[in-house]
Amino acid sequence: MLGNLLKKYKNKKTTRIDSLIGQNTEIQGEIRFSGGVHIDGKIKGKLIGENDGSSLLSQSEHGEIEGEVRSPYIVINGIVNGDVHASRHIELLSNAKIKGNVYYNLVELSIGAEVNGKLVHTPAKPEEEEEVELGLNYNEVGD
Image (cartoon, rainbow, N blue to C red; front, side):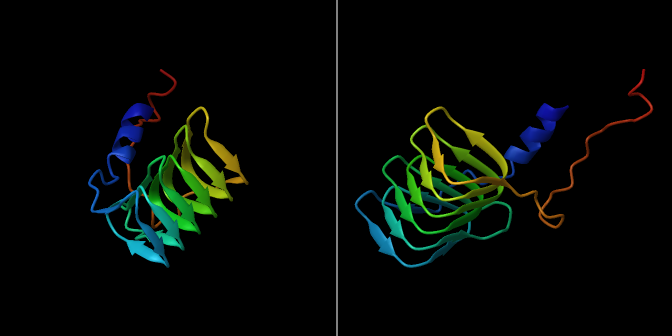
């Protein structure tokens, strides 16, 4: 039953990448996005994903971010110098190196991932939570 709940939850994130920041690209300034964005280059500034429940920021092992990161879904496999806020789900892969606090609702850490800061659980706000039916019948629990 819990597996079905997690599948429904995970399937809500976007799998399409709308924007790609290439390995030889450096951007300075604030970036706001909706949908999926993949970082292979260097960003100096804030990265802010629309809090629409489907925005995804992914970063490869070549990517480097200096600044605050905010998005419902985040996958990190490179260097981040700044606080990271994932309102729904964050995945830190084996090459992830974060110098800053990580604010998360759900977190996955791979062996080798580093966080030099605090891991702070922040439950999803009621308006951000999706309605999910668990299908539990409390009369059957004791049977």
